[in-house]
Length: 242
Length: 305
Image (cartoon, rainbow over the protein chains, first blue to last red):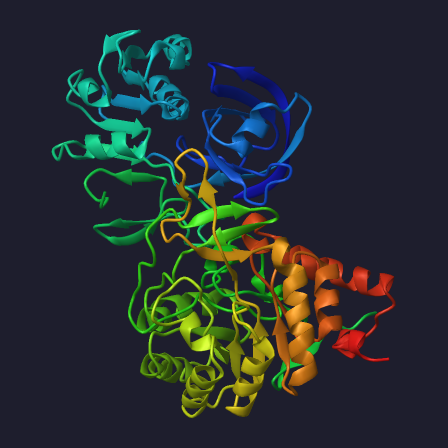
């Protein structure tokens, strides 16, 4: 984990509620897709955790959903703003043994969080199937980004206003393969109900510290209590007590 | 050269800074980030006889200039702490620690205290009779003079180590409770634990915390903690470990002027994992700025003259 100052270099609205933020700073602590950062916001005591959507040595991309006053404030910051970040948090996905045709399922704000994993797997010659699931057409983002890295993209909307009508569970019909998923807890729980799946699930949680000290984000698992921030946020399928 | 040494119940500390229980785990997360031997000491996560998951989530919320938690004493139980956490801690921390003792009955406090009393790594026992997030224990013992004195005396009887009793601010008269603990044999008082609080989510119109209430900590409570340390200092002879919202070296000095011999740092560690390191590094320069050469000489300094 690193603590350092980042500079916001680009703040782009992708939909009415999701912004893509590009920041410049030292990303050396980020080592694996699926890790997250904690962003300190002016006037807020607690940092806000966000999945890393993409990173290079010195640039960081986050997709931020406007959810409350903190994320609202973050999405309205102009380029040039300096922000204090903790980087390189969480375990990230395990990519040592990945089948040739992995299935990535993202829901809502979890879609962007799967991008760096998709990129990483495509770079390694995997045929990535990316199922991007949203409530309605107006919520859809990042489809072109996934297409640009040659992922096989399938869009699902609950109301059928774009792509297929359906949700994350329908995406399971695309391929019976290793699953990587990020999205709302309800979506992950529904996916995890399919016991035969070889899955890695990235959880979101209301966190205090983000690095394992406060025990604020603990979940119950088959192996005992686990901290989403420090033991996760990625957990294997079949271990979480939903 | 300034002197940052203080003495807490006969044990010397290189500086008064002590990360507060529940904000520093068993030290290992922070030891990965910096050499925690720079600390005066630290107080380990509140520990009960049996393992506890704690309260259902969400159990973290934000306040203005602070945070609320309703973690509810998640811990692996005293036996696992001693068998697994302490040996790992010994690899990275050479100083005696404060073992934070929790319970739901006098018998449980005594049983946990007996086990910690046998550990060389433990310098002090910190008796937590002030957790606002558990029912039928914790704060229940710290809200009346009689029950606070009863558990203090019972634990004092089974330990050779200095006994620090940690008090809750959620009472009508903290001074009388501090005096009751002193009379029952406490060697020091630590205060304050968190302040009972809540938040409501405007979208769902429900409390943010599943437990409904939680404990408020952070800069918001600093003036409140400072006032209570002041009042208790006037009433007891034993030393005070002052804590509540301390975030800077200046806060440390202010807390000591109010009467604290040592100073806890809690929520600041969660917002800034390097908070204690920074406070300790900046302390000599801040002392010089205010003309302080020997830190222990200022304890209670605001009360005199």
